[in-house]
Amino acid sequence: MLTDVATNSAFYTARRWLQECQDDHAKCPGKKAPTLPSRVIDVGSETKRGSVKLLVNSTPCKAHYTALSYCWGGSQQVTTTKSTLDDHVTSIPYDQLPKTIQDAVMATRNLGISYLWADALCIVQDCAVDKAQEINKMGQIYKNATLTIAAASAKTAHEGFLQPRPRIPSCEIPIYYDHQYDYDFATVQSSDADEPLYSRGWTLQERLLSPRMLLYGQKELTWQCQQNSSESLGTTFYQRSTGCKRLPVGIFVNKKLSRKERPSNTQTKQIWQSIIEDRLPALAGIAEQLHGIWGDYVAGFWKNCMLAHLA
Ligand SMILES: [Zn+2]
Image 1 (spheres, rainbow, N blue to C red):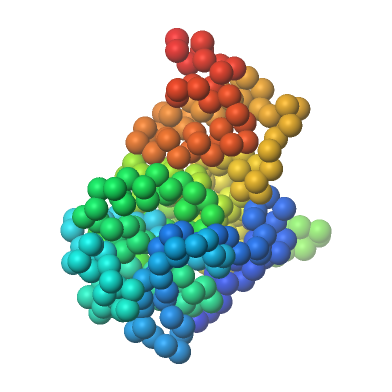
Image 2 (spheres, rainbow, N blue to C red; image 1 turned 90 degrees about the vertical axis):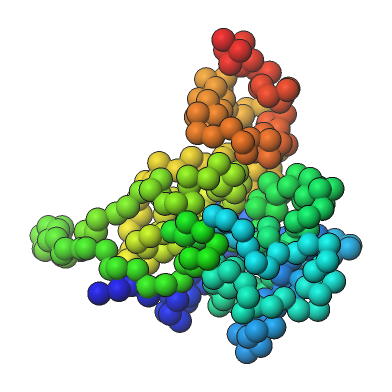
């Protein structure tokens, strides 16, 4: 038995998760359209398949967009370079795109969103100045995205993520509640840490700074946001603790925390230490966002626990 994550019903479930998150979750950003990155892929619509092009925003404009978090795993045949930039504004050759980006285009269209950000096409790959500028903005790009699509199961950009998965083994278990038996399903769950995507250092930033993630894992499709740690397209609804680290909610609702709301010195120390222990390469973007709501970030340290961290 296979679980197909590319069916209308799976996309319907993902759209419902997004709508509930935007409408009902106090800890998550609402429905307001974010500012678009300087370049995004216009994915066209369900009815205009094949029409994919690059949209260059010379002035700030607002619209919903998805951001793709994925492994390159080698070179890509189609990227935006100085010589392809103008052509891509007219049209991007969809059929030549690696499967993971094709799948991201398809998922974005089916979520009812018009724009997708993917580094290979939205950063000019052979321009050092553009690369430096855009990489610097990546924290903001993931933080502002309406939704991050995480191609967690794919080791390379050519693998794609919309193929059917083996159905997760499950069994029915009786629950005695309110003087009667009810039945629910128990499933064998995988850990996100096993996914190929999370062996890549940069994804720490993408993961922590994304307010919401639709995660296409090796076994299942899951939803992660600031309010719900995880919700799965499995046999039944369940929530689980993934051990996934989360940044303070203030970052996503753009609320400057008062002195009283800020974490204690011990909490600051614990939160920062646990992030550092994971991976180092992606820390700059995260520190910048935390500094925005906490303040007090000085040359790699938090003022109020600098001595402890130096030690
Ligand atoms: Zn939410």
